[in-house]
Figure 1: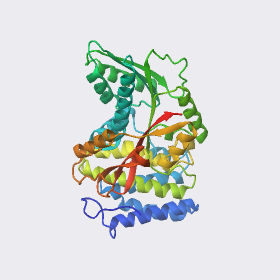
Figure 2: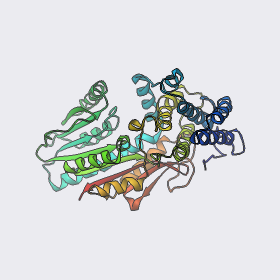
Figure 3: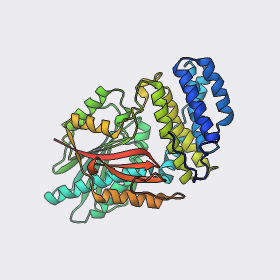
Figure 4: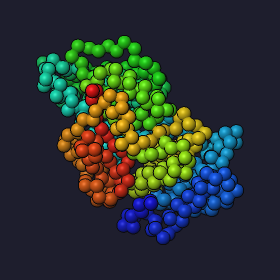
Length: 402
């Protein structure tokens, strides 16, 4: 059941137009699942008359799901299919991601929480061996590199003229241009700190890290933030985790979206995805005004892009994200020779502080209550999740080899 809060501005009452749109989406999805294309087209026609990219959160999310459903009706040869599934340009993607990063706690929660865990592991090993002044992060999806300035800052604050600190990031990316831009961004940032050495090595995704140059007294960290869900099969996940284990890292940090949206059953995947993205779109009411151009960019070129990809999982199985629950990822990690590490109270306090800073309209909840953004511990303190109302969005955890 979608959680629609009557107290929040812009969210449609359960007995109003919002619930009617949800009803139409479910009818359309069911018709498609039963290969009743005529019925689906009829319902989608009504849906497009009521959905809107500039309406309330339910109207907006309905518009993107409707596009995804239409794409399922069409063949790849159809010009309308290309029009509906048109990918944003790299510049549009970067702008949308940057704006989402700035206004929502979604990605910042993920990055700051695991960076705190990395920092604590570094400090612990430094205490045990004062010669450990080098940190090597192997990031399996470095993307734009937005995760790392906060870690660079934290490490640089500890550096002195007599105790220089070095950070080396080996980052995997989807193309050379993005890797080069990420390297330039991080190198420029790191240059502003004294007694701090920074090195970046970019590798294309799928490349093997051959002859790992492990420096003396270097602490190895593996970063699996929003990465495992992009792998095409359970076997690939297993092989990746096996490889990670072989690197003998001091800590592995994992962040994934919550959900069970990898099922081959289209209707189940549709309903789960609708719940998840309805919550995400609704949360943007807390971050940006309704008529914001930045909001439209986030929803069109970041969230909407993902919705359409998930809706056409059957047509593009290799490139569709495989979202799982925390419990499922836990089983895969433990089955690959890892054991969960308890996240400290500092990680939780930092997440709470982030929400306090990032809250704009709605009250913040810290004990799992279903109003606005909330953070809460799970798995006996081995994981921390970010939620919106009663929907868990993202979960962070840390692991070590056994």
